Image 1 (spheres, rainbow over the protein chains, first blue to last red):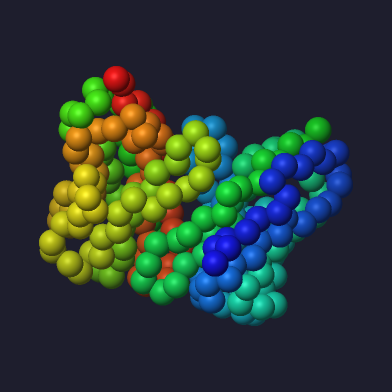
Image 2: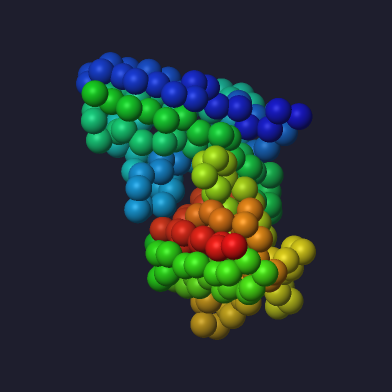
Length: 111
Length: 114
């Protein structure tokens, strides 16, 4: 099992560019989430999904879109990148009643 | 909304000693789960231990154990026989119900010194 796979691992964007962070899991988990991690602020939830076709906002959803067309994939789209979106992004998945398994993260820099 | 508070930004412990990391949370829910995650310098998030709120018995995983005080809304992590590899950031997290959103505290940076 590959677990939770995030691509790319590193990305530099210019202000105003758009991009998609990819996330895939091969464990047939129902629940998937995207987090961002900034120094001194822990992990903050961006978007969340309870299954294919169902998504919900987290604490910091502005500037990000998600969709969940399959159980396996949960891409995160940055619509128009801003320097405030410079962060480390984590995708995670979970079966019901258990803890989340995390991907290895994407370090995004917006210049 | 649920909140998770870790009041110790940094801690240090000598190798082979015991250390306790504190966590409090605020919720009106009855059915929830609590977790401790470890994030070493590699940045990978690793699940350390899990507690179901309806279980009174404290969870243990090898050298890691928790003290779950439901009425006080407290969930501390005890690491026994600390090892150099335990050096990491530790996050306490709360999840409402079996498939809810996972909410994190701000973390405690633990250094294990030789």
